Image 1 (tube, rainbow, N blue to C red):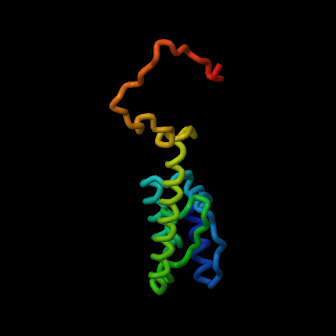
Image 2 (cartoon, helix red, strand yellow):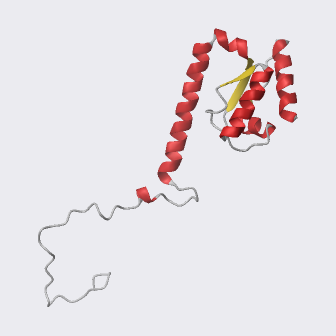
Image 3 (tube, helix red, strand yellow):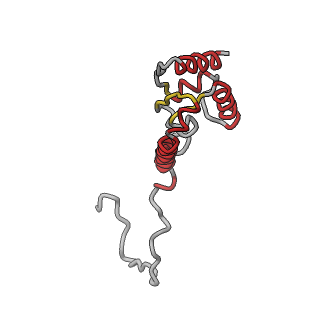
Length: 144
């Protein structure tokens, strides 16, 4: 399988002291034949990383889809666990901001979100009904 071969090459290069190039999360998911990070894919990737003795920073699950991830041996993170957890927290926060921003303005099909349409029900009703003088004639929108 392509993903296992690539992870083995990365693990071997890290063992030899060579830092592999960073990969985008999108490219990394394609190694496993996936476009999205569903629960099944995440579990499959975590198992493959664990069997190769690798971890990603930031965590591929929470990093932005076009963001870059680095690979390192699992024991390399033991020394810098605070740094790794900080990076994962930053990646989670960034993803949450992007998701919130995209959901605020548009629905899935790209149309404006109804939450941002003018709220017609927010106007207060007055106690007095509108009084229309019978002598008032209808006017056109231009005021004529």
